Image 1: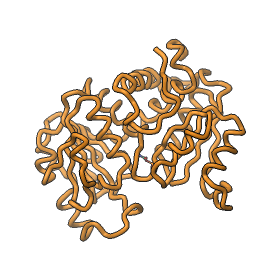
Image 2: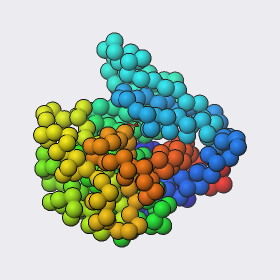
Image 3: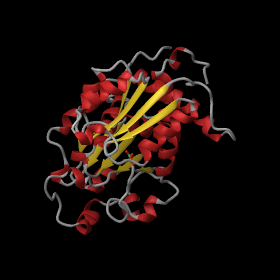
Image 4: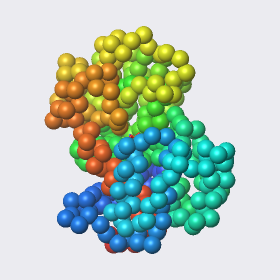
Length: 312
Ligand code: CP
């Protein structure tokens, strides 16, 4: 089956069958990273530009690793090393990148909607690697892949997402994705960190962390995004940890087979205790491993590989 999308900009624009196709393709890609020689020629001759205007460890390195494992040429540009600092606009920058004939542009940007803006102006495929508080689709896809791999399904699970929902692009994309794939999503945060009207998406807003976690199959903890908060939204980190931190005692309220997730970076001792982060049921590092395979799948599908099911 052919993958029909030009860009990956958000989860809203993906149909459930497209999400399943991406997850299936990623699962197939995973084995390549286990080989002694972790490289296949599938995207030889393709050019991928990684343009990150915000800091990143996992997303940038996993997109770069994914490109290299598929033999594509990957080129990196950061805000500080680009002519954006000399006043060039994002659209002019994108048009100049386009003039060099890349096949895919991966963009992380502090402004919501920036990847959508450039996707309309360039022929290259655009992947949103996180835009403001709006969306982080590749993170949500790797999260869904990780849950499906561990639980064998997504439909019917209770997924609890706890933390700074208001400023989290991961939360928005995960809520949309897990609901689309048939999970029940429960969220919890201080009132100042719950977006107005979020329940209209179909998720449940839990009044306490205990009710949110009760019977959960999956718990996803989120970092407080201080860099996106205009004012102080909670009294102290200690109080936040007491009311909204995941510790061993609270974890007992979840299902026995619960898995614990975090998109990273973690603030240990604030939203999650070290003993929970490092426990056997934590799949935080599996998420990172799956991130490479998932991003290989996105490159493969967008660069035309979806037309050749046997290409890898
Ligand atoms: N999960 C995530 O986006 O991490 P980075 O900011 O390190 O890329």
